[in-house]
Length: 305
Ligand code: DC
Image (cartoon, rainbow, N blue to C red; front, side, top):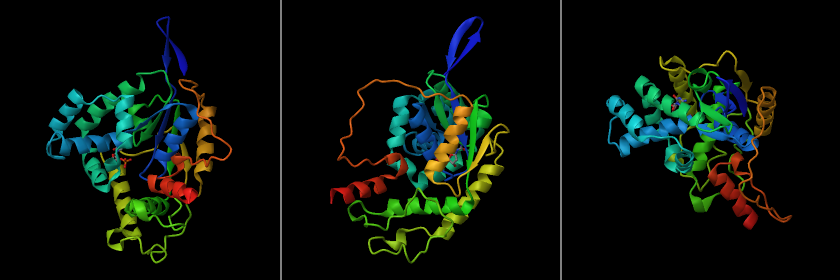
């Protein structure tokens, strides 16, 4: 939290950490973990675009991108970013689906939609003195260029495609049939392209699985769109620190980002609103910030057995 003097009056501003970068670079994981470590709020702007796209199609019954004006009007009149709203969209499994990502990517280049969402994002950022971690494509360049700590997180297209592909495999695994050891380990990126045969398990319906090659092609196409669009193209802010997560474990990525945030003046926000829960010596600890839901479930199931 920083204190600033305005006309002799002390006002408290939140400490802002802006994390930008291409799809599947690990921004979501890093932003969530930074927020948790520091006790900050977390604004995942990708989820906002996804939620707007979903609302446009399902609730407001508007076409993307043909009815952009009306979508922007709905945002101005009906969308207010609050802690409760964010909790709700972070829990919404449907927003993670590829079809929603595609709708979001068609609405994201629209100037008036971005402007309407920008107003809401800035209002939320400054609605509290509690620090905040922003996660997106234009956080350090457009939404909060004054952020004292900016991180541009990237990784090679191959590594990002592999992570996305593994996530898709995990989503395809039916709840009751999670195999014992074969679930790909999402948190340790390595350079190898996955072997299709090794992943060819009986419990997986191969027809439903996207191939790694197609995922890599999509990733490159998405990068090209993000980089070349006229509205808020993806770019590293001049004063952002670049972290390449290609060869990092999550812990290494978090440690480098935390060191940098501390060097920029971030301090943990301490707020005890409830008694911390006590973990007994014989309790298995699963930190779900490292895992997707099926992977956390699989670990709990293995332990229960
Ligand atoms: O990070 P994501 O896949 O959840 O983002 C969904 C879409 O929204 C993607 O097409 C990028 C876009 N987006 C954006 O243009 N600006 C942001 N700040 C966040 C996401």
